[in-house]
Image 1 (cartoon, rainbow, N blue to C red):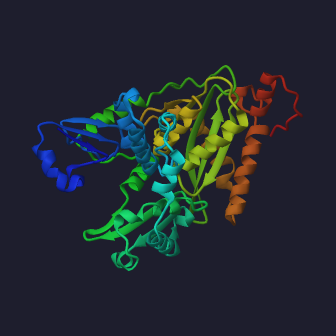
Image 2 (image 1 turned 90 degrees about the vertical axis):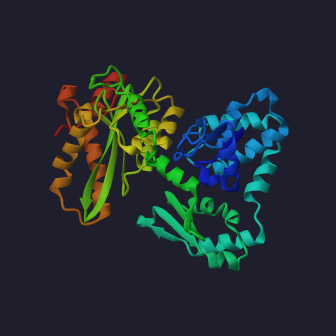
Length: 401
């Protein structure tokens, strides 16, 4: 029997591939999204943080020794960048906690295997940081190490661990790209590619693509089903992203509406239609509103809303996700109507001289929409007024316009 772990294809087995081919039975335990299920038996879960997490699931926990626990913990911290990558889930942290309870010296493991570097490793990392560049308006940081530099600093590819993690923690950076040269050309970290694909909701081309597609369609349920009338605030939120060109630069506006009074409960403006944009918008709304009951969050099927990072984040709060049917904009007509009003009543009417002026106009319209604009659905009350009636709050009279 041959068991392959943390390996997406036979090419990654190196010299051991001959033993894999000769084995009577083969098993693959992996979390790479590109895995083609090449073994006889495959235990592949792309949403897992690491192959080590999957190994833990398969073992009888009562039979895991301290030494085995240490090995599993090492695998988890290296594949998650010590729990920094978006692949880290609540389940990952639970597994790590159970391993810690087995008596492992987790601080020493992290320090010695992840953070401790040789003098040569520190030098090549410094070189990579010095020659790094910011791209896409500062959203992405990139760096490249050549073969000549690796020879100069006396390091091998295995000594480059930690460089991409250091690049990732640069302030205001959303993604890091690190390349190093090999005999075959330049290589990029598979873990980094996997992280980016997850955040963008992308799948690799694989033999079982039809099954994956069908499974995804089944999982993206439309719980709202165009039932836009609700009985209380914070029962259903709807969200979407639109864009607007200002001085030839595309700005993305993400907004969240509470269906009860059609109130804007969160919005953000950014230069990238990313998971981070929708996540930060939801975070703003959730921290402001602090929903007490069950919350349904309805959106379209955009990759930013379907990304692993976003779905995991919503699950932490017990939020139920709902998705419009493919190609049916009426499933999210409240958001479509709001963005139409925003552009018709404000954005299309003004030629903005700067980004600051554009952002200020968006801010002002959101206040106007919530506090001064009457809605027919609300009996011609403003969203703020209708909510104040529901909560029995006394607010200052609002100006109608």
